[in-house]
Amino acid sequence: MKKYILTLFFITGIVNYMFAQMTLSYEIRSSMDFYQANKFLSGDWKDHLTEKDITGSPYLNDEFVSGSIFTIQMQRYVDIPLRYNIYNDDLEFKTAAGALQALATPEIVEKAVFGNFKLVYSPYSQANKIKKGYFLVLEEGKASLFAKPVVLLRGPVEAGAYKEPEPAKFIKKADEYYIRIGIEQAILINNKKDLIAAFPDNREKIESFIEKNKIKTNKPESLKEVVRYYNSL
Image 1: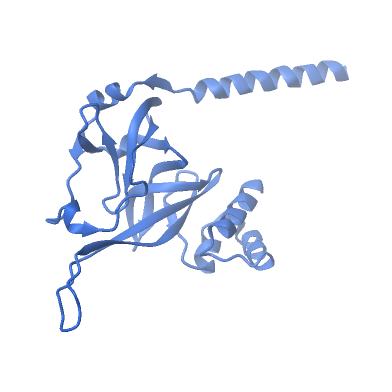
Image 2 (image 1 turned 180 degrees about the vertical axis):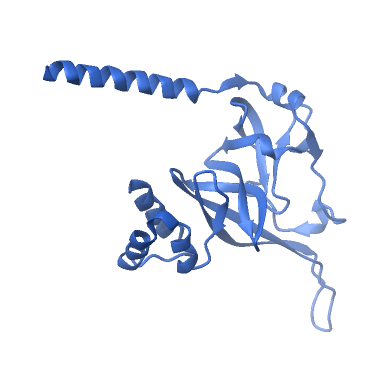
């Protein structure tokens, strides 16, 4: 009887695994299919300045990296040259003809994977408003930890009595960190109060874990510990 039960559990497990694989399978499509099926924006700056007028970089990765885009329609488009423009919050592409473009409907993106990066397009809360944007995935599960890179554009500086003029410049700031539970909007983590509030269903356990492990909310490794702990509950 015991052997029969173990065999039944084994078979059930295999069936469940195969079903999960089937439900998570993506239809593989080419980069040309992607260009033809989706609308794009040209890659111009959202400003009167051009790239030649600005020092620094607005990009997560300056060079295009071949990657895949997974859509909410369960399609995977492969071998697409990708580059993330932090300043514009655009995922840029280079077409076969060499044209620089950005997706006009990012809502179709479930995730984009290129090089060591994984981006998701997610709703998030900012100043009591719900917005949408791209995030770097640092940890995934029931709760996910996201990083949002930040680049600011400082305008040109005029010459002074003892100072040379300076061109406009992209300035990289510290990443912002967000936590998302399930399909809810991602919540910005500024302090321990925000971190505890991000897990309303296990508030006391999370608060105790934070104090016991001396968690720092500006350290991604510390935030990963909290998210992993929550996902283990």
